[in-house]
Length: 210
Image 1: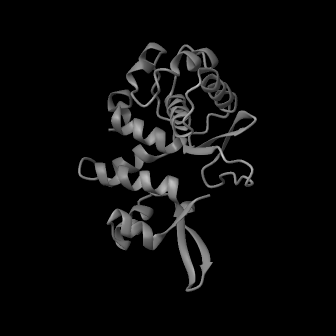
Image 2: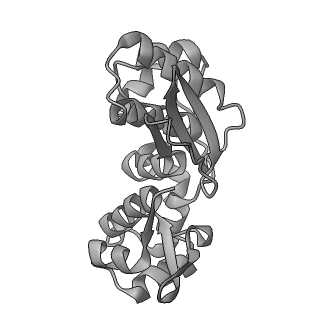
């Protein structure tokens, strides 16, 4: 797991110590993301880089539009009661349109909820970050990712890696997998962060949040 120190986080984002811990108290940032580790100066706080940076960006981009209570609901991993059909998936820009045929084939349903939209976004991001352009390989990633999604846990991390073939894992966000050095093609994307971004961008799908 790639960690960023609290000090480096404050420097990169420009936020203050007080803001960070206020957002923690308001549950905009999960408490389990704050990881204490020993360092040469004593004990230091670290956070998961791939989770905290997009979360801070989302908060900063929306804190003037919504109250902290509204933001907390949007960023919550709870599944919102929105259901859309397969054709409406085309409206979600974050879902790779070239992956849609495979998504609709392997995840065929009458309607799709927030977890589905977030998972499909996470799949799209992993394929992009792994620079997968071969159509068969992209279909393989979709198939494997959909196959591990039965629990419908929005508060999760999708990890796709290659070990001969592509494989997918779905884990809790506070327990990402650590691979040995022989696995060089591995990407993890937070399903919960994808869900939060979708809830904020596509407000008309989630009227009960506002």
